Length: 491
Image (cartoon, rainbow, N blue to C red):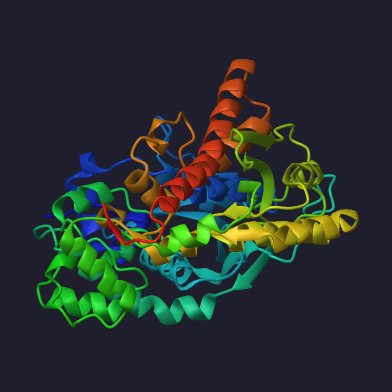
């Protein structure tokens, strides 16, 4: 049996053989995956192509155009100095090269990446292409990876000179070719055999989120051992090798981590555990209390002057205010004008948080970092902003020490905690924005100017509702945990 592969499929197979097998044999089981990385990659590629003004774009996926034949014709034409998406196929494997540049009697290969450094998987990626091109008879010169310079600072006026760095990876790729050859032979044989056995784990998310996670999860253990937080790969492999795939099956005494022991015990018990420490800590907090959450955008290609690639740029906050003995208040900020929102964000944040009272966040590292960076950017607001950081109370470690439910599956993220503590409040009931990646994409769409008034208003409302739920969730979680004062509780 012969199955045609692409570079993307081979890379999927290197991540997980089962993913490749399912992509070829059960593609209907794939679920849509929101991939900010894919969208970012397309934007970066468009900008990178501007550095090759003479290159010809090969038609791909167009009716009546064979990209392989078009590539061959262009390479034979001495007037063509470069190609985008040059297409090659050999040994049942097809690849499309980001950039081929004529270099005398040879061709230089340039792979464009949206990241800021070379990674091992990039060498895998390029080595697959080189293997196919070599077998197709293409004489290659330099092999380069073109990526973003993380130290680039955008000065405005569409001046992106210096945004990209081009590194020669010829030696690394050529040294890797033997490994690539072995990988391809192995994967070509694997896809002709029955579906491989592979349990869910970190490989389902790294380096790419797998589109078959739902398929595999439905067929895996109810409480996979891979969900033990921060578990060493060696531990998970050891458990699976012994036929232990479910946390409830782990023998007593096999886990050394107190957190893992606790998760095992509660999962076996089947009920939530709520300890009194959370109530004691939270009831001691003075009023007014501010529940705060930020949303940020990261642009690979900077949009606003003075910013770098992938800077975390805040554009939205939500704040629930809980005064003593008075109704809960909600305030919000969202700047979707397309201008740099940071100054207005910082000023409004200082104003809404007042001068006293705890500021409750979920995972303080993020909010504190954003506030510090704003303080560094706006010297006149520095003291007021840094004063906010002194008042921050992190809800995450309080929850982690005192609450766990088996359905949290080893995670204390707010999206895992909320449905267990407050079943009636669900992110799934929101509109088009239900998680952080969707919030970034929604904001990008809002400031693009490509939406009509109705679409913009709907998306703006969805963004406001999403961020509001983040802070409302903290209010409700605190309310539930405060009920456990002075006693342990099984829910």
